[in-house]
Length: 332
Image (cartoon, rainbow, N blue to C red; front, side, top):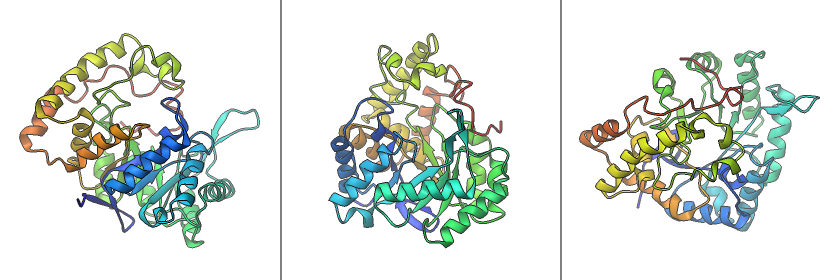
């Protein structure tokens, strides 16, 4: 069946993409073969947008994608591939951000080599380097496009004001931001600015890091996951409160006869034609649940029932810890 689409810099892509952070064991152990199975399912189901980064598993996600492309000759023509750069380490080994032309191009070249492709369809600055004007960084991205190494560019986790500044230099294809029923800050300016600029809003963690699914991460697994174990929403008593809150959403999805993940994806797609969710998963069955969300046409009544189950502001705990908030731009 044909699926709804979104536009990124003129390219027509599936309205839902694949978040490939899961290919690098962010949410638990996986194998390259398991990642290929998800990509096989994407090919079968018409999901064409693939999102990765140079830092996902320090290249492991890109390597899995590259191996898949080499094994499947037709895949490169099907997939619209996005990757990112800009996160680095200083001389002491501490995390920092580098948006210099030299760093971005060198990292892009490594990404292209890992994936075995000549150009990437979409290239993001993963995190802004605060001291470097975004206008200067945008000019760097335009130069990379002019060299033929990227077809479009964007930024991850920037504020609406920064998008306006960048777009004044050149059109910005996409902005990536966390957006879901659990994280609705983008509605305070970013959703609107992306619509004004003709910029795709690529929504990562659209399932609220599994809270908005039928199988949320179990409490006993949280301490084994490096990122989750320090995230406020997964710490007690917030974790228990968030499970209780999302039980209402799971009950609603069951009453509607749909997987909770499908309902979460469908809700996001209903928020604007510029919005493109990219759920990540290690499970083909779960991936199919997410794709089901692209097939749902939610009525006004459906949307009201979802809002009643999870009214804006329901989540307990901030979306990031203090350390996790280093890099993303806050604007509200």
